[in-house]
Amino acid sequence: MKYIVQIEIDPVTGIELEASPARIQEIVGRWQELNPIGFYACATRRAMTVILDLPNEDSMFEALHATWVVTNNYPEVSPVVDAEEFPKLLQRAGIGQ
Image (cartoon, rainbow, N blue to C red):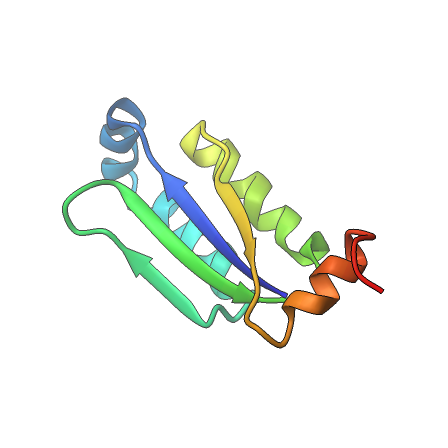
């Protein structure tokens, strides 16, 4: 299943992180370990978007936790599917046959 993870960093935390690039690299490294199919940093505000294709959300938990600890904000995670995966998602939710 594919997931879109939106990481927002508030201005106060952003200023603190800019003074410590190693903490930012820690977050980036955690997400890169999951081999994302897309990783985008917004140039006009403190935000990152990560697109993952994973068998389940279990492998994301460490990256989510590390991000929460560093940014003081929990990332927004949205599962997304294409037309082929949609019936499987319905079955997983107990809606389809």
